[in-house]
Length: 88
Image 1 (cartoon, rainbow, N blue to C red):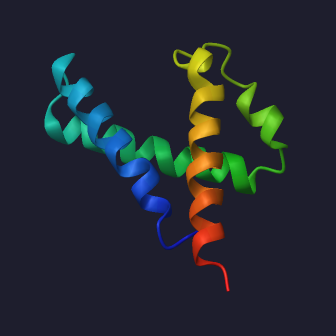
Image 2 (image 1 turned 120 degrees about the vertical axis):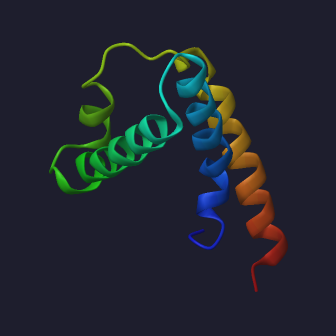
């Protein structure tokens, strides 16, 4: 799981950085914003003592919320399928 974990997110971070620049941030501002937000988000999710549901409910606006089930399905299908191919 952890060996490939970054590959699940790198393309998303790259796209968000490009969107940041398209809406007026410098490359550094966009990259720093993503970096700082990810660190804070990871700390909130895993070190705050809140449940995952409580964390996810902190921000009421979810711009891609309607696509969460599709993303979840892709993860489950691809990752569990991959594991089934490589498990001993």
